[in-house]
Length: 420
Ligand SMILES: [Zn+2]
Image (cartoon, rainbow, N blue to C red; front, side, top):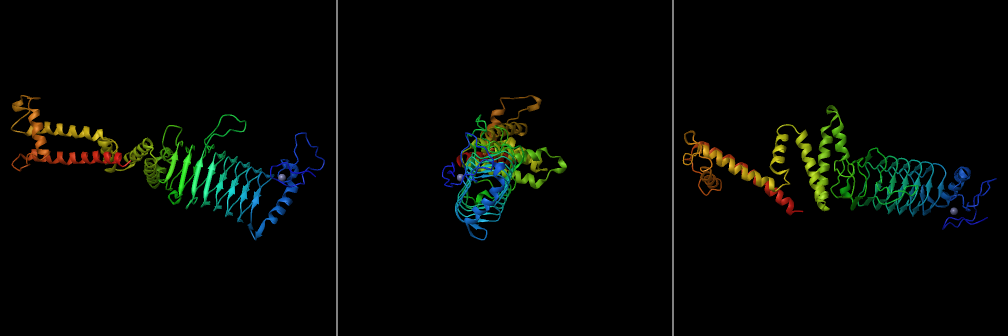
């Protein structure tokens, strides 16, 4: 009999399999902390059931559960249970599949440094307390879909090596954070900070992040993350990868573009545009103005490319005149161009200062009086009386409308800058 060498474990009945010859660096461990997976498999099951029974408070209800550093040799199913106390699984190693389907954690749940070698199911799991997955490694698929997070839910430096799903997660009143960081790989080599290492789609669909207290995605590779149907305008995205390291094109956008024309669904396109709109707002809120510009332009580009006439034409004009309401210089340029062009056209009709009297061009001497005349008409220094020729009246009316439109775009761009 010797004490378990796992720090904090006070069990004195070390597990040594019958006939097992202890190696010099083997440390005494209890059945739960013993790394001898194959040898302990059978005995573990019985001891694990006993362990659970001692913590049982009611049917399917358990109090504090200290499973720190436990080495689970096979599958673990803690399904449809309620943990009323602390559930501690930090540094645990799940060698088989682990399922927490439908289970409720009413207090804190800790999985820091735990390793899930098999599949991990947190489907429909309810996390009411503070939940931590700091440096947890999911070697295979991890499923959090339909989970409910209501306290602080933290995935920091967590590694998802297989597929991961967060579809339909509820984050009402939660503080949800998903933060990558510098962690070493198994051989202690270069740090990989992407969080999601698989190349499959990572669904964050149908999540109303606006219900959460706070949501942060930081240093995360979101190049496979799908946010279709989610509300993301309150989400703080900081140093995340959307497409490689330099592009801000959403995964959903790229998928839509890659589809054949027949497969394309307009509802999906609208959802993508809405995502870009919300990302623009979130980027502005967190002072990432360059990202906000890019998202804004991409949203309008999609509208210009895939809207039918006349929507696409209007978007084209919007782009030409003001770069979708972002540029102040472009409207000014068009303002001057319009005044000059209209002045030139005026010269063709103006009997007082004709540009081409009797086919004899008087350019540019006659242009200046026409510019003056035009400015006087446009800015109402000279009343637009109906004695003027009809072509001058029409020209001036069209010019005024066009200048008003350009002025509106200019003000939109100015307001956009001022409201930052
Ligand atoms: Zn122990």
